[in-house]
Length: 488
Image 1 (cartoon, one colour):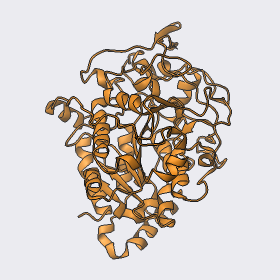
Image 2 (cartoon, one colour):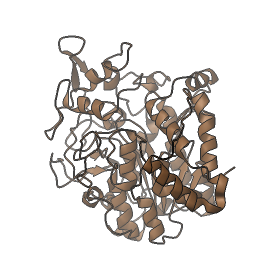
Image 3 (cartoon, rainbow, N blue to C red):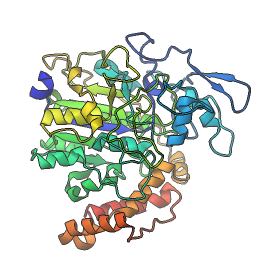
Image 4 (tube, one colour):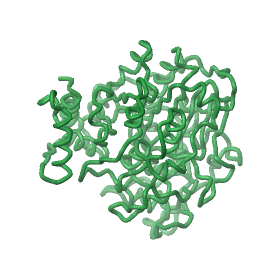
C-alpha cells in the first residue's frame, strides 16, 4: 500500500483482445501449486461429430503468420457461446462450478464450413510470445485475473471503465450506454492532468456517452510518446490497440490476427516508458478483455452482481468470465512475482479474484476518487499488493526487441478485403452513432445532449452504411471519429 500511495503517480492500462491465460501464458512455467498453468494433459471431448473423441491442448511450433494466428477462423464469443464453452455441450449454465468442457464442441458448431476441433485448444510457448513472457518473468503475472463476465468484448471493456456492463451481455448498440465512468471521477475530483485515451483507429470506449464531453482527452497513439517526452503523461492512461487492417495489421491479438503485432505494441509501450523519467513512478498493466473462445482450464468463480439488475439475456453478472492474461510492470515489483488473492480461489468469495474492476479499485485508492462505482468494484481487490519492493530496484529489461514481422503487402491487402468480424461491425456502427461536433462546435454540449436524448428515446434514426470489409469501413470510421473529435 505504501508504494502505491507514496510512489506511484501514473497508471497505464493496455487492454488487448480475446485471448485466454492458457492460450498465451499457460506454458510460462510448469504447472504447480505456485503457478496455475497448463500441465499438458488438459482436454475437451468432441461430442458433435463423433462419439466422445478427446481433443487435448497442443502447440504448433514456429513463428510463421499462420501459426501465430491460431485459432483460425475466429471462435464464438457471444454470451450463448461462452455458456457452452464453460458448461459443456448440452449443459445448463448456472451457479455450479463450470467443467470448462465445451470449447471444442462450440468451435466446431460455428459457421457453415468444417472447423478443426484442435484450434481452440492451441496454446503458445514463451518463445512465440517473447515480449509478454519476458515482462511476466521480469515483473509480475497474475494467474488469478478473470474477465469480469462470461460476455463479449464490449461488456468486459465496460466493466473496466464503469464497474458494470450496463445490462448488456453482448456487443450491442440499441440504446446509448450512459453508465458513469472512472474517467469522469478524475474530472470531478479535479485531478491535474487526469486522464487520456490513446487509440489507433476507433476507440471502443467512446461507446460510453459519459466520455463524449471530454473529446480533448482523446489522441492517436503516436501522441503517447510525445506526451512522455514532453512531460505531460496523465495520471491515468488507457491505450486501445489497432482493431482494423489499414496502414498496418491489427495489433489487438484478436483471433485470427497475428499476435506478433500485439507483441510489437506491448514492446513499444514498455520501451517508451522504460526510457523515460516516468519509469520509477508508473504502474503498467497489460491485460485482455476476454478469452474470445480460446481454451482455459481454470473454472471462473461466482462474482458479486454490480447492481442486481439482469441483462437482456436474464444474466445478473454474478459470474466471472474466463481467466485472461494480466502482466504488471513496475521497478517496485520483484522479478518472478505471481500475484494472487489466495493460493486457491474459492468458487464463492470472499476473497474475490482480480478482474477488470480491480483497475477501478486501484485508481480509486491511489487518487482518492471516492467510493465504488458499483458493488463489483467495491468488492474487487486492488493492485497495491503487487508492490513487494520498498525501493525501485528492479530495472527490468532496458529495451525489448521484437522480430519485425514480414512486410507482406499482399497479405495486408487480403485482410483488408475480408468480411468484417462481429467486433469490427460493432465499432463501425458505433462510429455511425457519434455526433458530428464539427457542425456546431460552439454548442458541443447541447449537441451531445440532444443527440443522446434522441437516441435514447428512439426519435433519431441512425443509418449505418453497408460497409462489409475493412477497406470500405475504415475510411468512414476515420472520418466519423475526426468529425466527432473536431479534428477536421
